[in-house]
Length: 454
Image (cartoon, rainbow, N blue to C red; front, side, top):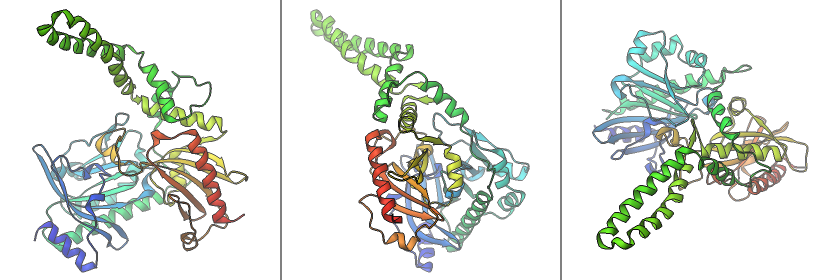
């Protein structure tokens, strides 16, 4: 029985229907298919007791490399504040190499006090990961389960609350599919329990090193007034980058190269106009090359785009008298609240025309960027970010009551415990504007007042 038939038999036995494979995003590194890879039969639903997720056959194929796996993809959003990204790969099944990494991040290997575990698994976390939380998750009990009971080749990855659990494929039959789903349920439960146990003094992820580079770069521009948009802030930093020796010399190199090539070719047929043609090319190429290199410039690990985004957010907060909050603490405090991604910025606010405190949160929804090692996604057929307002209520609506509320187009509302979130998806973080954010705050406030009443 091939893998697709095994998954189909598993789905049929549980009344699960095949889902659309086109919607599968590479939310963790193991989900990348490569240039010639593919995704086979995909089933979505309750895969085991306490486990909702997607089950599918996956093939990674890129160049000479090829790997076939059966994968369960599920969500453990409670883990995002403590382990934004973690990779635990069976060395025999997936090798000991590192996944792609973002320019401002670095994977680090973790060695546990178990020779059996270290010999079988390659455990990686991001620099800044609290070692205590990882060792609490990989308790002696979990290590024993992974080394003695887990199916052969089992690997798993976390990325912004997305959990991938994989076994080498193709699976031989329905029983092997059940083993994979049972293992995924076991890991999901263990990660969720460990995250839920973090209480008053949680082991939060530390991004101090990354922020130090960004803040050092931010100091290179002083804004007399808040920039009107993220793009306006980026332009300000791009101008600074455009004056650096690296950018200028790179632009001169391409100017000379292009002028030399074009001038040389024209000189063969019309030597008297070659110099003029080379000058025209030089005048055209230099500013274009300068713009390209300035846009890609980095101060250490801090890119022009990342610094501009951070600067706009801080200037917007300062001009509106909003205070910034630690986004990792935010995720820890609201770990059970359904969210449209991972928080890039969290600001304290108040609902318009009231004294009700609230949080204004800018979410990103592009976990696949870490999987692919890319900082920016230029083209997408879906929203890559969201604006959100969150309020804490003494008498929150029930989920059933909230489902009956008619919301404005594109607005979404959800509730967990005493927290109510209202958000609206947007194309991406880099297109934010101050005027658009002001309108969202006003509209979200009206939506919330309509939900909770006067």
